[in-house]
Amino acid sequence: MQNVPDSRGHFGQFGGKYVAETLMPALFELESAYKAARRDPKFREELERRSREFVGRPTPLYLCENLTSKLGGAKIYMKREDPATRRAQGDNTLGQALLAVRMNKSRITAETGAGQHGVATATMAALFRRECEVFMGSVTSSGQSLTSFG
View (cartoon, rainbow, N blue to C red):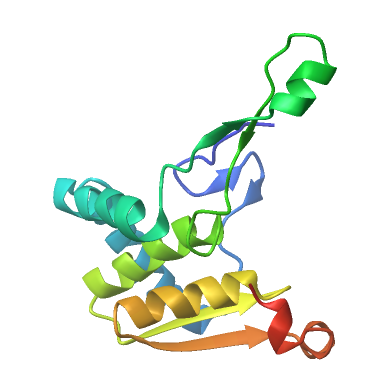
């Protein structure tokens, strides 16, 4: 099995875009905007700057002294995600929000499971003054309380 899709978006005989026909124009528009943005030095600079200044990237490595001493010399480090705004979801949603701004979209929509991606999406939508709509399945959302989103 190949690791990257071919020019049609397929992995061997599998892959591609399997969505409702009415969504295809939006997906083509998104794909085109993404390809242009990733080659644009100004877009990449803004993404890196906001990642550093707002999300908190890069996050630090922390030497786990107690674990290192227990293991007899091997230095054990932990990559800290706690200083990053919205943790790892912040990176992904920052790029999505910047792309939405570039495309002049007024609303950002997300689907989430446990809720962290939805909270990160709402955070970035607020940062860029965009409306936000987050969808969560009823079974998942019934198990979440407002205090569980962090």
